[in-house]
Image (cartoon, rainbow, N blue to C red):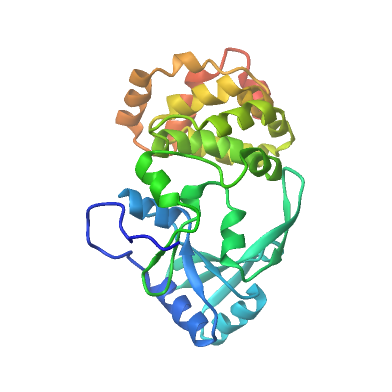
Length: 287
């Protein structure tokens, strides 16, 4: 379905950066539809600062990469196995991914295949608020009701929560991270049940992926809510191998860390130190 373009009260269109505009033009001239997708669209609708731009294109990525190179753009094969390249021009960069479906998942990695079906591409995403697209005309495409969930403060998985978690266990940690920012209505019942039931799957994630996600989770304001959910669902023990002292990161302490460090890199380390029990630091570092 197509919805109104703006969740916030401004009448400004989505601020398409020059590199994204070039990709729209090059793909369109070849008969391929490209869209801006995911977090940038979500944050724009929510009135937050827009971060990195990600795009999707309904064409095999090898074909599109060749078109972009012919047009003089630098293309880096950062994730061809997953249908993704990084496009660079004049100091700008963005990730461009072919529309795709999962053909095999094991809870840690997915084998993907090209599909030009935008609905299928949306259906494989983690949360409804991330299955949002801006097309070349600036129109919002919202196939799964992500804007309504964003309006209502509902953070929910696309489709069946258990299936999304079984496909990639990291999504459970991502749910905890996004909840303070986008889940004002509280924890979705289906999501909470899936996190509690499937928490053990997080033990199979690599330390690198867990560290990357935890650094983001603990950097944001409202981290106390995220940490409480990690501990309550059993995710902390499975993913980190330790019990977190979640009660020590009170809202007051969380706000104090934010006041001193903002969202800078040291903030997450300070919060981690607050919730780590004496003697657990060495084991956490090994994990």
